[in-house]
Image 1 (cartoon, rainbow, N blue to C red):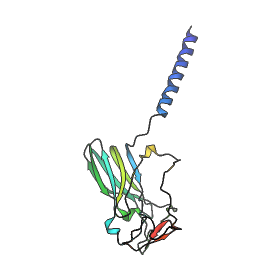
Image 2 (cartoon, rainbow, N blue to C red):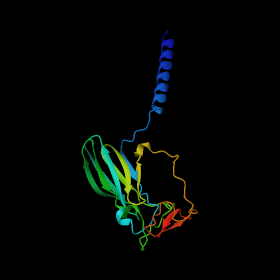
Image 3 (tube, rainbow, N blue to C red):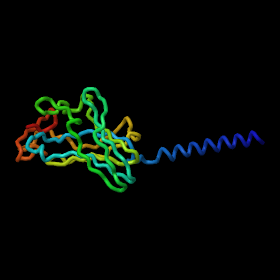
Image 4 (spheres, rainbow, N blue to C red):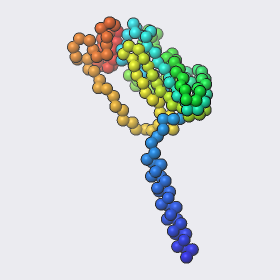
Length: 196
């Protein structure tokens, strides 16, 4: 009798454990978290005339009062340093400018040296909070409107599928797509970008 009871209890525990794992695996991941990394998304139009009109922001939303720290990395040593700390009120947001001097590596002429993003470098922005928040990247300006929601570190994986607009090979007529006739620029099909 005791053996039957123990066997029944073991089977019941196994069934409950298996069902709990199935339910947990189907729960969607939340965009809330306390630890995020962001990367700068350069504009497809590289033109000095529009640079003053472009801006890049981190948008932080909070359901609770919290303290948020923005950090960057030394581009040579990789050492993390705190830039600023912000107080975010519950059910409000804070729009923080991205410090581009720490997120883009430039040469002596001011050009981005890693335009293809193929070389590992210390150029991310680290956002941490003492309570849950959501974090988005936002850029604005001529030919530079982009936005993405950053995933919290606990939700990051190893395999991604990304939906992206098709590349313009520059073989069309006249002014390439995304390039205004007001700003002199030309298309570089090898790099997939506009250059001045």
